[in-house]
Amino acid sequence: MEILAPKFRRNGNALVHSLYQGVGPGGTTVTRLVKPDASSSRMEVTETYGPGLRRGEGGQIGVLVLGGMETTLDEMEYILEARKQKRFVPRYTGGEIAEMCRMLLERRNDRVRHYRKNPSEAPKKRTARLYLPVGYHYVPTSEPGLSVLARV
Image (cartoon, rainbow, N blue to C red):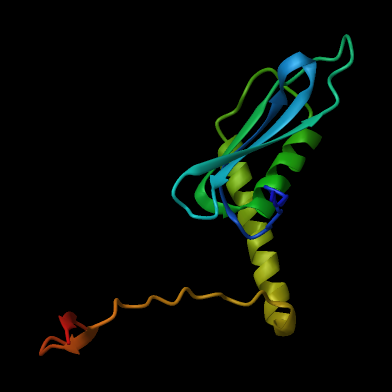
């Protein structure tokens, strides 16, 4: 019996390692997303292909956005769309990374202000519950804030 389940489900709050958008095999455009898999034991790559460039079209071939596991998928896609809208200039300035960080900071601040005004819309925090092995529990010590794992 074979169970068919989609490999990729979009989660806007998932932390992303990197995002690449550029030219793929056969002249098509490719968007490559690198993030940890569900078990967090390895990195998973999701590729999405789109139509290729027409003959005579040129400009910037690829955009690589590095998040370093501190940026969510929504924010990475927002940066990518802003980068696509920007007109291609063959030379780079030193302030492009600072401009992307400033743009992201402003967007985060706007979302924080929005959620403070509308707290019912704010996403719920999910905490991971850690369980101890059977037969173990924490024992307090004379040092405040320090507990030792003891076998019962």
